[in-house]
Image (cartoon, rainbow, N blue to C red; front, side, top):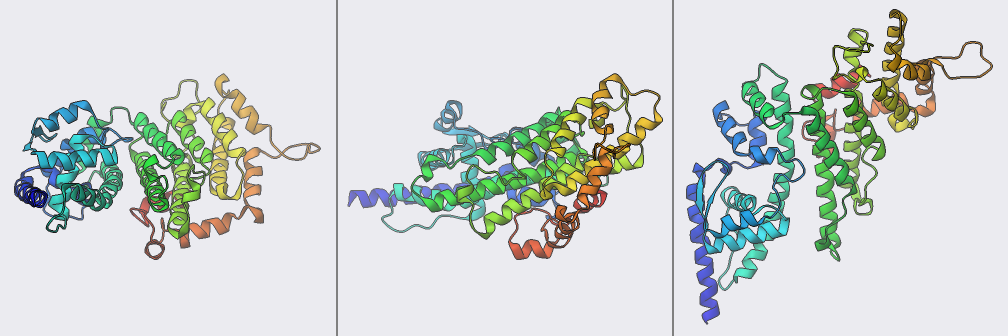
Length: 455
């Protein structure tokens, strides 16, 4: 009888605490989830003004600074604040945390290995937006904690994906001066990303890390849990890749070092196909995730070559270039990119192969206009001007022309690949995205078509 009374008392405490949360959390900027924030930034929620958006973003400033661990890791400092019973959230709102709350928050922190304060925010956001858990008379606190961890898991995983998706409208607004949130977003991005190239490199590093991730020990002996984890990991790779695409669209300069890193990541992971947990990625959903991610990386590889810029005017080849953050300004990077492209001539890379051939053609034309090739560029141009083809030829075919010839061979499947992109890929066909259950955030974006048109 005492145990039953104790259990019911715990339930009463939990529900009383939850009611207080639901009443007071409206004054906190964290009552908006990342899923809701993404909708707001994307313009899908009306009546939210730029000053409010600035408040929502600034409250999450430290989270946005951490790509690899947006919700942090458990720490003694955060645990101490939680145990004090009074926690000041990043938006300066002070919340009281009773013993019942602590038990749930600590369980969330330990389950998902996140910072205790972030676990508190997730817990309160879950109750505010998703509602109370089910409960029955006699339910023990331990059973309620287990129920919470089961019901909050989809919410947590969706919040992780939404966090990465928030970067997409941020970068799009930055590149759109007419956007109502352009100024607010520009100030925010300039504040949290002092070095754009370093930010892009952090996305690449996190993407590569996720391709090498293995299931946590907690999923050992539980095939379903391991498979669910692998799918979530793949979804995060996809949205990270989307964030990289939009970052490179207008925010991050395409420097030589960065373009090389992007190409190395794409080839090393075989366009996202090389996964440490490949045996867990079975079924149509997992297959579609890999395909969408691979297609997106093809677009990124073409995007960073800036074909439109190369077409509008011949690139600058100088020992002291004006635009030092453009990949053409780095002869060492040009040489490395060329090596990577030439050594990966499989049909899946045919569009990239053709795009690089165009870049080479523009560089070759430029050499015909300048009086002398700078010494730093000589090794690179010697490698591409020596040509390829039969050794008996009096004049060998230039590399870029030979590359185009290879692309036009039937076995290269150039036109089949381009047709597949434009007619079947969820990146370009919204109906296909719905039919295939694709996790691509924005389908048929003008930017996607602009990049592919350049090919």
